[in-house]
Image (cartoon, rainbow, N blue to C red; front, side, top):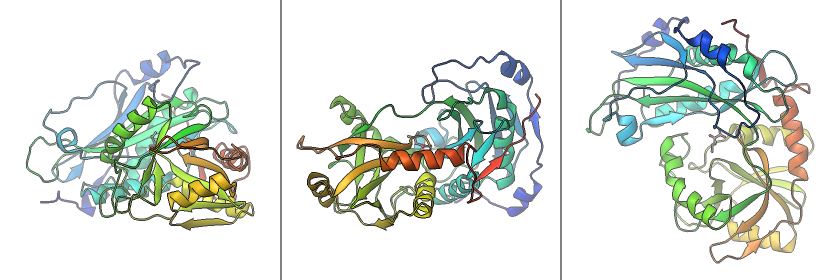
Length: 369
Ligand code: COI
């Protein structure tokens, strides 16, 4: 039976949260290291709220650290976990800002719905983000390309092996000051055996299960000296879907092409933003079914001049090479030309260094904790 969901519970949610002892000291004692990596450095605080007896309890801002969970929790046993990734910036303005955070909220709600988990009320989502970003405002890097990566997640905490949803949930926001996700052009391994997601499955949800499904191919790619796996559709193993954790674009005859959302691809917010931004800059953008073999032929003939990846973590990362299962390599003629133009245009908006004609950014109030 699906867990009880009542809008009354959402309405009853109190938009205040508690601040645990130790939060102030954790924030005060935190020193931002020079080398950040991506997820190596944890912000000193995190937000947690729990759903039980049909209602969300009061949220808490707590020092970052291990959490307790029953070993039989469905999040651990059955992967009942959905998450988001978004960034807070502090480059162009002293106060922090978010980028299209409402889209992250909507996607988390859709992901929770796909796994029939209790939804997180929008007010709770933004309360949590506001608490973490607001309290950490001083440690958000100010250099372009660096930011505070936010990882909200919702997981089922009830122990039990019956294949049904948990009746208790935990919603958390953890954060990491980060630098750029990938260094240098990516070397792509075309994955022709494993499947990441099929239409009707959970590919369009940001569910941890999708990322688990991609790990074997990621390891195999790294073992071949490559960076990331490229996924094909589950039915025909022919049409391009996405890279592990990123969407993909190709420049063909000077126009942008990206796989249309096929019911298994994750609808990336960076992907969506790029489509809008590129069109506003005069590029023609096509969302269509993309045959991998056709793209490889277009790279070989030079019609496809450039390929790149995009995502919250990746921003826009150039692809330097695509390697097939038979070890044949396809090298686009240009690396990071159109991608560089679009990356700078997007980052300038995200970082509030340029006007935001789309209304994509919103400020977060710094908190004096
Ligand atoms: C993100 O870009 O936010 C993701 O979740 C991708 C992950 C591989 C870091």
